[in-house]
Length: 196
Image (cartoon, rainbow, N blue to C red; front, side):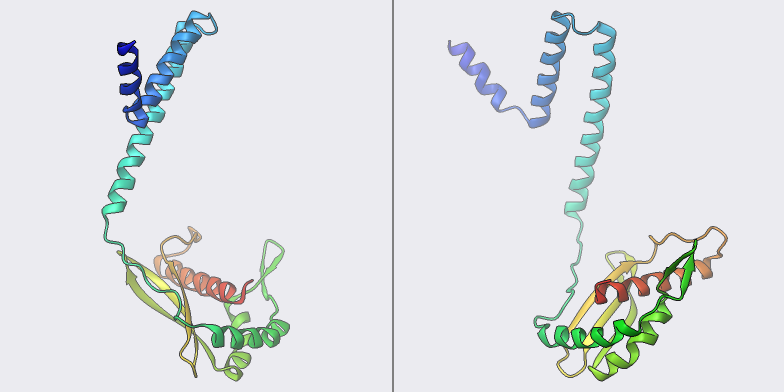
C-alpha cells in the first residue's frame, strides 16, 4: 500500500511533458495488448509523437528566449482621447460622404491613399485634426508610425507597422518595393483610424 502511494505521489510530481510521455507509453501498451494495432503501427505513431514533442520543446525554448528579450513598449494614445474622438467623429460624417475608391484590382474597386487625402483634408482641417507619418526604429526594426492628433488639446492616437512584412510584386526593384510598402501601410493607417 505504501509503495502504491509513493508511486502515485511521484507521478504527480512529474513534469507535464514527462506525464504526457508516460500516458502515451501506457496507451501504446494497452492498445498492443488488446490487439487494436500492430507493433509497426505503434512504432510509426510513437515516432510521430516524438516529433511533436521535439517541436514543442523547440517552441518552449524560443518562447523562453523571447521572454528574456528587452522589448520596449510604446504608448498608442494619450491619457485622454475624448476630444480627439469627438472631432474625428465629426470629420468622418463629412469625409465618408466624399470618399470614393478610385483604385481597381482584378475588376474590384479599392481605396487608394490619395482617396483618403482628398476626402478628409478639409474635414480634418475644420475639426483641428492632423494625421502625420514618420519612420522610427523600434525593437530592432524600422516601423512606419501614423499619428492622429487634435491640435487644440494635443490628444493623440498612434498606430505602427513593420515595413518588411508587406507583400510586393517580384517585378519591383528595391526602391519601388519600399515605396509600395510605405503607401500600403499609410493606407492601412487611414483605414484603421476611420474604422473601415
